[in-house]
Image 1 (cartoon, rainbow, N blue to C red):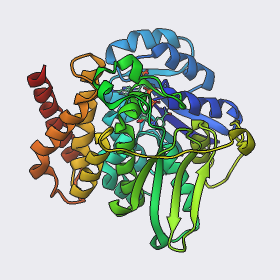
Image 2: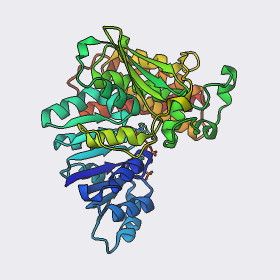
Image 3: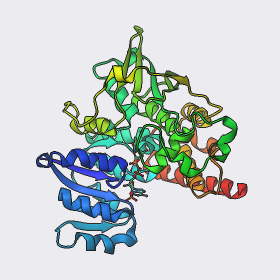
Length: 389
Ligand code: NDP
C-alpha cells in the first residue's frame, strides 16, 4: 500500500486529491491530512480515509478537532510546528496544496524524507525553486508538477532533449476581467475578482487569475521547474482553457497538451506517475468545441506579467520578494484597503526597495534566508500599503 499525505486537504486541490484517493481506498494508507481552519471538513475526511493524524494549522482549533475525532483513534494536532512535523512522517507521496508561502516548509520536509512531492503550491517554486530541487536531489525525493500548465509542459517533455526546446508557452484564461474596459479595472471588487470563467478554484488563486499574478507566478515557476532561459518562456490568453501549455522544438514542431479544465487530470497524473491510469475526467470533444481562440497577454492590462519577467531576469531571491509582497497586497485588496489595480504598484515598489539586497544572492541559499527575505518583503508591503491608505 502506498503511504500518502495531503497538505491543504480541506482546499480545492486537497478535495480533488481526496476524490481520487477515496476511489481506490485499498491502494493507499493515508498518513497525514492537514487543514487551516476548516476542522469540520478535516475531521470528516480523516475519518473517511482513516488517516493516522489530522493537523489544523490554527492552534486554538485543537479542542474542536479533538472533539470531532473522539473515538476514531486518529491523532489530532494543531499549530504551525505540528503541521511542519507531520511532513516528517514517512510517506511515499505527498500532496503540497497549502496556499501561499506557508506551504514551503512542509514541502521541503517531505522532500527531505525522500517522498515524491506533488506540487500544487506554486509559491514554493517561486520563493525557493533551487532549494526545492536541490533538496529533492540530495534526498532521493522528486518534485512532480500539479499546476495544470506545468503538468502539461512536463508531459510534453517526456522523452525529449531539453536542448531541443525553443519555447514554452503557458496559456492564461484571462480571468474575470479579461473583457472589462481598462479604465474600469480600478473599480473591481473582491467578489467580482473571485469568479473564474473556466476553473473552480480557491478564492486567492481565482483573484490572482483576474490580476494575472497567478500567471506571473507560473512564469517564474516554469523557469524554476524546467531550468529554462526566461526568454524562452511566454504566455498567451486562451479564453477556452483547453490548451494548457505548448512546447516548441528546434525542428518547428509544437507539442500541445489539450483537455477540458479539471484539476483531477494533473493531480491524477502526479499520483500515478510514471504510469497513466484511467481518470474520471471529461473527454475532449473537438467537434463540440468547434474553435479555440488566442489573444496577446497585454502587459498594460496585466502589469504582473512584466514584473514576473523582471523577477526572472533579476534572479537571486527576487521571487520570494515578489510572492510575499503579492500575498500582502492581495490581503489588502480582499479587506478593501487597496484597489484591484494598486496591487501591482505595491509589489513593484517592494521589489524596487529590496532589489539590491536580494538579486545577487546565489543559488546556495537556505530556508532561513528565504524566511528572512519573505519577512522583509511583508514588512515593506505593509508600510507601503499603510502609506497609501
Ligand atoms: P484553497 O484556498 O482552496 O485551499 C488552501 C488550503 O490551504 C486549505 O486546506 C487551507 O485550509 C490551507 N491553508 C490556508 N492557509 C494556511 C496556512 N497558513 N497554513 C496551513 N494551511 C493553510 O486553495 P487551492 O486549493 O485553490 O490552492 C492550493 C494551492 O494550489 C495554491 O498554491 C494554488 O496556487 C495552487 N493551485 C491551485 C489550483 C486550483 O485549481 N485550485 C490550480 C493550480 C495550483 P482551510 O481551508 O481549512 O482554512
